[in-house]
Length: 102
Image (cartoon, rainbow, N blue to C red; front, top):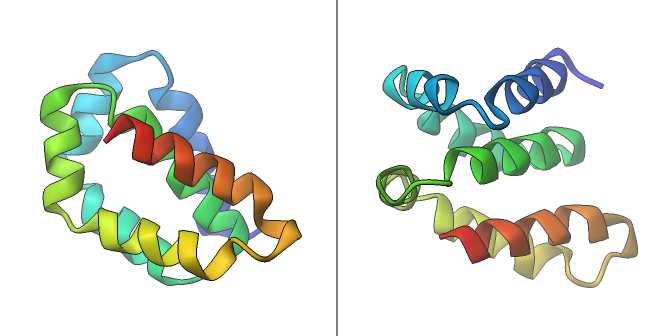
């Protein structure tokens, strides 16, 4: 796994059930980085970025920020480019979860 994937996985774990960490990440403008990571088309990085976005999108205010950042078209792209690939089912599961949160 790449350094970016490992770092994002660490952020997923840090932000899990910790509202203060989520707020800190949002205030440090993590969303443009998340959007950039989704554009890279790296499966591990995409998976951990989706998990991080799911963690961050727990409050209405944060959901609005995620939507405003333009993440929705990126997850639609992931959805439409991955649905036929059985190896991408885990990613698609997290795409569905994020859509449900938004």
